[in-house]
Each structure stands twice: as C-alpha cells, then as structure tokens.
Length: 357
Image 1 (tube, rainbow, N blue to C red):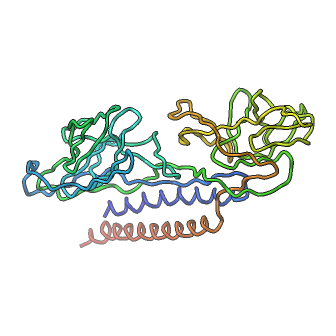
Image 2 (image 1 turned 30 degrees about the horizontal axis):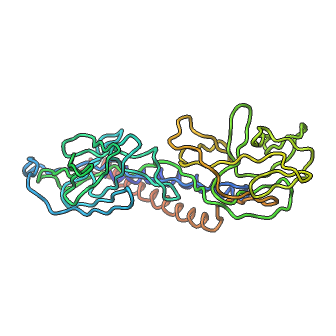
Image 3 (image 1 turned 180 degrees about the vertical axis):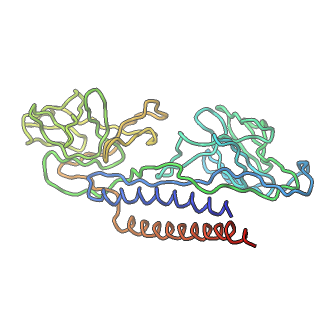
C-alpha cells in the first residue's frame, strides 16, 4: 500500500514538472526564434524480488536465443531468459530489454536520444557483463550475438545475460522521476518583416554574438545599431563578423544568403555563423540565447544553411498541440491526486479503525 502511495506521488511530481515546462512553451509562443522543450521521465532502478521458498542458487543451464536488432552502431536487445544489467549512481538495474552503444570512453553503455533522434553522448549507464565487470570495447568492431555474447573484432570478451536463481520472481521499481529537460531545435516558421536589419536563418545553426568576453549563439535576428553604430541584438549583445564587432554607417545595407553585408556595392563584413555536432553542448541562458558548456563533447561545425534578410524565425511552439498536451497532463495529475487520497484514506482506516477492534 505504501508503495502504491509512493508510485502515485512520484508520478504526480513528474507531471507537475511537465506542466511547468509546457506552460513555459505556451508563454513563449510569440517569442522570436524560441525553441520549445520537454521533460523526459524514466523509472527508478528495477531490482530483483524473490520468494522466501525455493532455491537461491543461480541457474547454470543454457537458454534460448535473445532478440537482437541492430541500427547503425546501436543494438536493441530483448530477452526472456535472465536479465541485462546496467550500473548507475543509484546501483544496478535489471532489465529484460535494453539498447546499447559504445560511449565516449569506449565502454558498452545504454544511450539516450535527443529530439532529432541523434544520440546524446552526455548520458548513459554502463552495461555489466555476467562477470560483474564493465565491458570495454575501445575502437574495435562491436558485435552482439543471439547468445548475448559481446565480441570485439570477432573475439568474445563478455556476455550480457545474467541468469538468476529459481526463487527470483521478477523485478520491482520505485516509480518514475523527471530525468532531464531537452530542447527541440527544429526550425520555426519564417515570417516576412521587410526590415533591413532583420535576419532569419534557414537551416540548423546559429549566429554568433558577444557580451563582454563571452560568446553566445542566437537565432533571433532582430538586429539594430547602437550609439557607436555597432550591430547589436535587441539585448545589446554585439553581433560578430569575420573581423570582430560589426560597424555600419547606416541601416541601408544588403545582406545576402551567405551573410555578407554589402554597402554601396562593397562587402564590408560577414555575419559569423556556426553549428554544433552535439546540441547537448549548448546551455540555454535566456529565452533564445545559448552558450557552450566548458567541456564540450562535440565540436563547432560549419553552418550549411542560408541567411535571409527581412525575415524572422517564429517560435516552434504550437499553441494547439501544447494546449492539448497540457490538458492531458492536468487530467493525469488530478487522477494521481485522487489515487493518493484513496491510499491515504485506506491507511487512515487501517491505523485508526482496525486498532479499535
């Protein structure tokens, strides 16, 4: 009964965080170049549960094949026999299905996906072989067969299946938790403004701006000239060109698809653009401003899109879809509250009424 109360409570906490995130998305529907975000949840570790009677000696017999699906460098595994085990900061989780890849340090690990389905290299839990050790792959060629064997360059180095004792009846977890918030960097709709210093990016990437000694990255192209005739964002950050800060005599300039700024028929500078191989390296420091983490996993890459003068990118948050999701979460939250009240009423009767008998 207490477990049921705890499960309801953890679910309500996750739903509350999701409601807060979606509410922020809705509040920024009119914010230029805003990127919506969402909260992802995951369950706590699955621990083995056993019955009192029965043998506690692990099975040593063989087992039928496991299901193995390979997608590029990623493996999706499923078994009816034994468990896959992964290690995290809370201990060991036992699972009937898992997806594995090689992490940045060369170990076999679970992985997470970003909104665009790319792998998030900052996260993942290392797989444990049936010998209880981490599985190091290095730079060799990985293969996992239907017996659960892990092979590197054709040589077996470990096995993923951990057989358990006959008295083990399954697994149990303590509910769910909010794991992280991820940003959807998909492009929003482009809207015409016909203003000379309004710039939109078509394609994945950012324009580089500077505040003090710190570089930031934006897609909000509402630029203007300050008192020193420097091209700045509406927050006062200096737009960067190939020569550093961009200075213009007037707003009457042409900006082509490459970001080149043309005045009186001459190219006077070029707006600095960039992209990133790993968007998980970016931290949001404002509604539409980003900076890089100190220890980047990926690297800066070339921006392969185009710049469009006289247009602005709109928010990629959709009022209809976000509102529908918000209503759905409210219903789930209310259901969780009712369930917690039912558990609380039952516990109250157990404590106060049964004690009178």
